[in-house]
Length: 247
Length: 203
Ligand SMILES: Cc1cc2nc3c(=O)[nH]c(=O)nc-3n(C[C@H](O)[C@H](O)[C@H](O)COP(=O)(O)OP(=O)(O)OC[C@H]3O[C@@H](n4cnc5c(N)ncnc54)[C@H](O)[C@@H]3O)c2cc1C
Picture 1: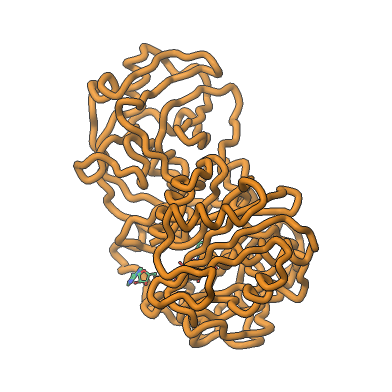
Picture 2: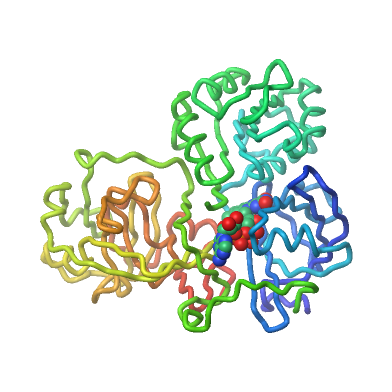
């Protein structure tokens, strides 16, 4: 592949590192042949090609901060009967080349210059683009107040758990609210139920003033419920941006 | 480039292969995509306005709009997030019949579809007429649910599905091809699935 701009938007990217995050989610770091700078919240499209030319493509959000360097991190959840995610979990290895294009998406993005406070609401792997926003905020060393409400089924499925709790402990304006839907809460400030308007109202109360923007990401059902909960907590619909991972 | 170790068994059967545009896969369900929360538009509050630039040409309320001639269209639809769904059955008012009821010939070559939530998307006028597109009111014979764009959504099935604006409340003729919501955010101005026009960088 050459670096001419008129070339295909697809390019090869080498897997440089693989790290299991939870029993079902693994992070993959990619070094694209032609490095690019993304914005927090953007995604890439990944394309797999079989020997007979058959191709499968999927979108994956970028988990790493724009300023992180060292390639882009994707965190992929394994769907057992899926086509692409089991390939990454079972077959992909460090050194493999995968085709991707990006960065993509111009709506579900947060830049430090967009300001805050911001509310982030993620369900399962829907936390991935929110993680890029949280990391971006941290690396820019800016005190934009953030409340992240992260819904997972159980404690061991809280992706980026140690990192998020470490950030929460800094008490620098980042607030982590975990809610476990199938286990009791582990921390005093956490919940053990599905997201609802009361939970959102309490998350918003942790911010010094009303949020300027809200970002919701996850499965379609989760995004619908969480966006309605935010509206129920008085967050204006026009300030809510959503990213739906499909079914 | 062949991907090491990728041998999926998901190839579409050869009799349907020709109906699936490049880079798409066949989906049985009906996934939902939108930029924000789902607006709940009550039919009492619903209206549809035809405009030339800022100037209104004609406005219909829900009852008036439902009294226009209705047609059925069963079509394959193609979402830019790579799923294709076969044989989706819609019923609604053809754009030709909306223009006829307003007593107009399209005054410009470009149109913006407008929605209750502030969303917009551009479609060349010629892609809306001659039986190509409708404002759909029913899906599978039932009112369209809010998450799928109800009470009414645009249906332009030969373009990627983001062009089929949900919660549509008007069409606006424009002098130039003006980008809408997603087109301003990196998506293609036209969006032909058969030419894989997903993003603005695609030819
Ligand atoms: C913008 C965006 C960002 C995303 N970011 C992430 C992310 O950061 N992390 C992440 O994990 N995911 C993300 N996703 C979701 C991701 O793109 C894939 O949808 C997901 O990995 C599933 O792909 P798959 O090929 O493994 O499963 P698929 O093969 O697509 O199947 C998905 C499910 O549908 C069913 N299914 C569909 N078709 C068939 C069929 N023909 N036969 C049998 N079953 C079928 C299966 O039951 C399966 O559980 C994102 C999606 C979008 C749109």
